[in-house]
Length: 251
Image (tube, rainbow, N blue to C red; front, side, top):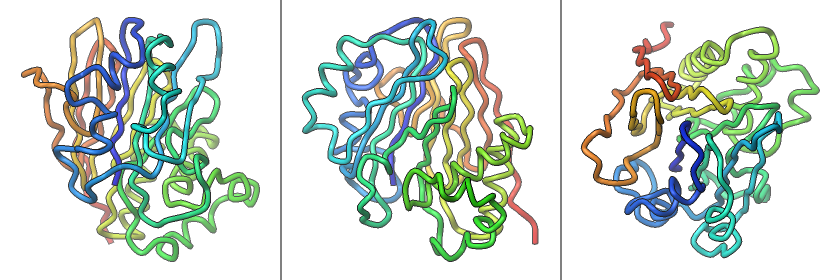
């Protein structure tokens, strides 16, 4: 349903990760190679990045296709960062939320994206949504499954869960409430990347001690890209990558 990517490493222009590679995220918006559902990601896009000395990431998001936005091309050419998260969107259902529905979603230092779809949305998650405080529901950025997933993750983080645990427990809860959902989640705080594979593709490129890229699919032909098996939690920094199998929820 989408393509997303996260990077941590030396300072680079955003375009070196998103548009300069031969099959970067911009090209994936119209020509994804490993997308399992949908063919074109033209329903919105966004990028979030971190600046030295600023505690919160900046974001640029729009509702239309990334290939038609000249400002995005200029921004990614001149803005540099040591970490980013970006996504192009293929909406599950058409909606009126515009750029508010485009990833990355943000809270404090966290950036978040969801690649997939919740089966039976919205009814299938009514019980989980009902467990959220009213103020959390009222603060939803958009009327999409991704926005609710993000609220569920943040609720766990707010209760003291570490981000990876919050991601895993949210995926398992949704997997139990809505079997058959596709739940590839991606999160970064600017130094660490957390991701899940649950129904769609995920790859990573790692140079120990220098950089890590985690993406829905490889952005070039580098032979060091590695595919992540389905039902896996990935946690990574620029120094290492850890893969942990995820079990299906039990009845």
